[in-house]
Amino acid sequence: MEELSKVGIDSKRTTAASVAIVGLVVYLSLIHLKSILMPLAVAILLYFMIKPPEQFIYNKVGNRFVSYATVLLTFMVTVYFTSLFLYDNLSKFIEEVPYITDKFEEKRANLADSNLYGLEVIFSDTELLASVASPSNIEAFVLGILGTLGGFFGTMITVLIFLLFIVLEEHTIAKRFGAAFPNSYPRAKRIVSESTESIKAYVVSKVTCSAGQAFVMAIILYGFGIPGWFLFGILCFLLDFIPILGALFATIPPVIIGFIWLDLEFALLMVALLIGNQQVFGSLIEPNLSGSKIGISPFVLLLTVMLFSQVWGIAGAIIGAPMIIIVRLILDENKKTQPIAMMMANDVEEE
Image 1 (cartoon, rainbow, N blue to C red):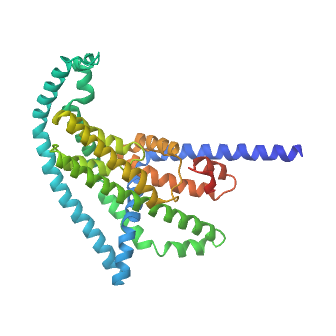
Image 2 (image 1 turned 45 degrees about the vertical axis):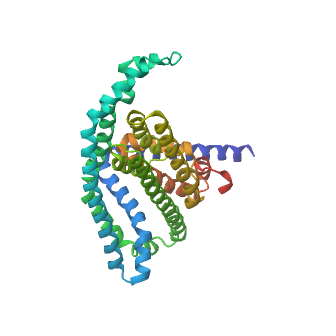
């Protein structure tokens, strides 16, 4: 009995050591093979993003080439015209920054001279406020994100090449794998099927909710006359793909500008509307769309975002969530690694 117990403990230690080694190898690969792995990961994510509308068009026309060509052409045209409008809105926002800075200094001075029960000391510290809420810092933050994403889109040729081969081989790779590994094929097919359903659920819910939340935010900001309203809507759409923290980072800059640009009562109303918009899409609509298919602990998602943002920047923070979903499903297929998958899950009852 003691020997069996010892064997079981040794087996668990071996599994833990193997997972640790694989994790280290993966981490090093993410760093040193960034130029290859990041475009591949983005291509896979884009594949899952275009697959639902492509399948819908294919069911209507019955031609795979026409369905993919329609989706890709629509995507490229949308990105092109959105970029033009974004550039125009960004230029206008940059032109308004000096005026916003003047209003910021005016409001800061008025609050510093007011009786705010000791809080006026905060507004008297110009360096502190400048580091936290200065319009120039908001401009630098926005340009930094757009610059990072612009550099990332410079790799889109590589991404499109990967995407092309994924599309060309989507119906043949399963046959080749089944012929090469007949004993492992049923298990691999189950993992791929579950991963596909989970990633589709994640991508569809995230794209729908991010676009909806960004559209409503842009309308709210436009209604209150906030400079850069379309710019902040685009940032909301992009940053909302980062789990947990993305929507918060997207909301803070327009809120700061709102308090500078508007009177207090209108600024508070705008903040209430933005928070309501975020809660409706983030807490009500998105969970109902994605259901229980994702099932990843928020803490694990946060660690994933931090890790991938460290090695791949903002693009990594966006890509990390769907990748960790696949990892959890693969770990769940092996009895030795099922405890790790359970620890990663949001609810043990799912298991």
